[in-house]
Length: 220
Image (cartoon, rainbow, N blue to C red; front, side, top):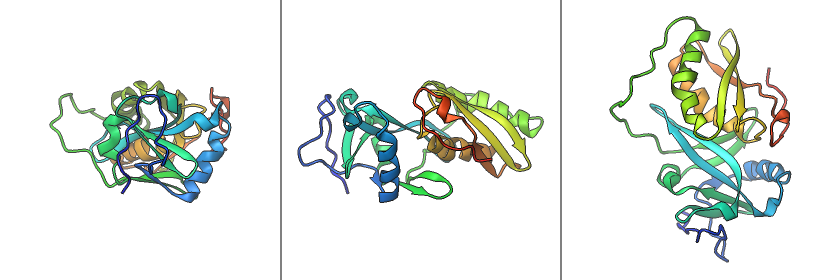
């Protein structure tokens, strides 16, 4: 198990390069390093893995490239080969034992043995009614987008065909090559859990148009 080696606030790792808290497979590391190569000052950039929300049974994750110099005291910086991986302090206990892989045709997949603890709701549960499209929109407005908005992003329903919902990521999520995992691991699980008619959720965002372009063909 990787040793908890904290950053000093300047984002510089210890000389012996402690292992990443989240294990990264060779396949995932290769894909992420290719994405990172397009970043300015790529060698000074880490893959940040964060937990940005909690559903009933799954966490909502966000992956992004961030300068190692922006790491805060208490954040955990580790390495998987040439890839620096940064986990913000609040997410450390939630990601301990997790692994990141890349599988076809899904893409990046985060496997996490941890799950949110059941809590007594402090806000009214989102009440879903109407057509499948209306219920998905209610779920986006009431549960998913408030969490994504804290990180500058949002998700929108593009269309529904049979048992498949096609979604668009916007704001900070658009143009991010890592947005696929945010949708797959968080939004997909939430929609499929709440809308029984939906069995698949697919990202059709034009990521080439975002501020941090990474082209990924629409999966229609």
